[in-house]
Image (tube, rainbow, N blue to C red; front, side, top):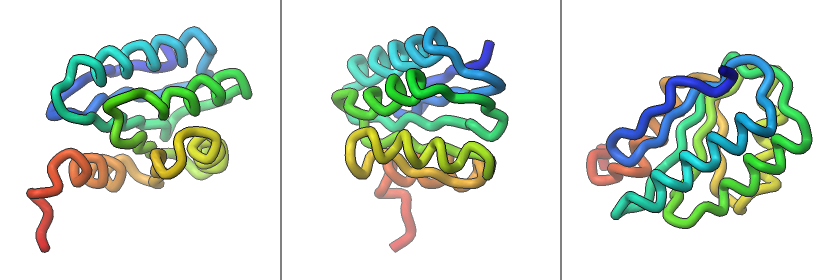
Length: 124
């Protein structure tokens, strides 16, 4: 499956994108995102490992950009490879303003996501 390793822990909804993403895959991710956001008492962050993502069509981009408007969602944080970076940034620009942040490594993306849900843990 092109979107795999779904998990939801500590207000971070994680998924890994691998290969070509279809509209059905994007819809499933969006549905899971909405369910987790709705069931959480506090706002959540979507963390996406797109380092091995392949083709993302315009229709899939539209689904992902609309997902950024999910109520109770702080941000979408994406780790991408250089070849997908422009697509990820474009999706972010089409979505809710300021809600998508793109990184080149999963470690940086995860650190940023965690800083959003646990700002009190940050060193002043």
